[in-house]
Length: 369
Ligand SMILES: NC(=O)c1ccc[n+]([C@@H]2O[C@H](COP(=O)([O-])OP(=O)(O)OC[C@H]3O[C@@H](n4cnc5c(N)ncnc54)[C@H](O)[C@@H]3O)[C@@H](O)[C@H]2O)c1
Ligand SMILES: C[C@@H](CO)CCC[C@@H](C)[C@H]1CC[C@H]2[C@@H]3[C@H](O)C=C4C[C@@H](O)CC[C@]4(C)[C@H]3CC[C@]12C
Image (cartoon, rainbow, N blue to C red; front, top):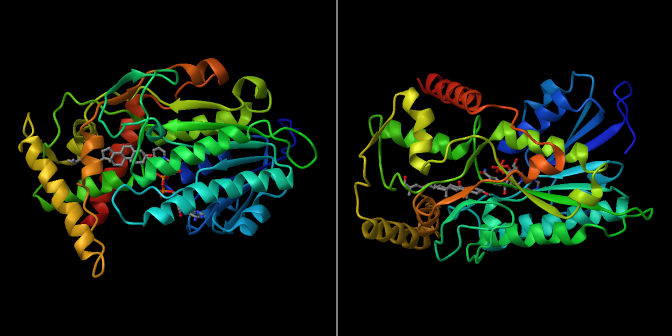
């Protein structure tokens, strides 16, 4: 990968570049990758904000395309130096069918790998997920674990299953020869639950709180800790990995890294309140207001209703057996592997991450008025 501070030469492709995380990666690359000549943003749905980015010094090429279409992916990948594959179907609410989730997340990733092989692109960074590890179907806690912590990673839900399969494909492709004979260098980043500006689930909780007169009701014990990471730090880690992958190919190729920062370990609900609290919402109850068995019953009812109503309407509440199990299982990471391997340090402190997220929620509030 040639390049100097004076003459930008590199071409990057970000799949899913218009999504929640993708947008942050795109903007971070433009701010912090001086060797960038062209940035290709590939997405099923192109966003209007891309237009503003086209006036800067880096050529921003918007490509409307579908990762499940091999020819569209190959055309976008051809001539790029680095691919950051972030596109994915993030669905734990039953919005998409298991087949569609598999197609986008697994076949889509297969297409990206094959496009790299065929067109000679040597560096591939994959956005995986903590969910390839857990929480598992048995609800075993994962407490301050790192990339080497033993854990029984057994899934049934289509989303974690698809992410685990896709991650495996990416890691197994490391070292295979791309067109021209050079080895493909791949690695996978596993963010925990991402938060920050643009986070749809945070928006849903905020709207739910408004509907209940500014109140949210505690469902999960405060003692269940959930790993969270600020979107700006996840984007920064992607930029750093992409930058360092060539120089440290032997060390980083085929590796996985949890995406972490200094966000505090808290329950999912208490963590959300760090942002929703300053925006006027209150979490009612120091203990769950309903017994767990009743929540399980409600979640099961929701799943049943979803199934019954499917021919008529898509019913996708936040609470279902899977999201309940996730929210109710401690899953936190504590690792410095990314720091040791490629010098990662969070770019945004917890205070800054929090302030930025609160600012975004406040803007939601203003636009709702
Ligand atoms: N949100 C989280 O908490 C979280 C945590 C860990 C990992 N991840 C991973 O990060 C990635 C991005 O997630 P996100 O939260 O930004 O989701 P998102 O839905 O906001 O973004 C995904 C993007 O991929 C695009 N996309 C979907 N299907 C596509 C297709 N067939 N072809 C091309 N583009 C397609 C979407 O249009 C969207 O812009 C995903 O791979 C997800 O699995 C997310
Ligand atoms: C029981 C409810 C009472 O308030 C709370 C439900 C919360 C759930 C909707 C969320 C709890 C954990 C979240 C997931 C987690 O943060 C990690 C994820 C990995 C990532 O790859 C995609 C998003 C997600 C699955 C995330 C989705 C929302 C939760 C299940």
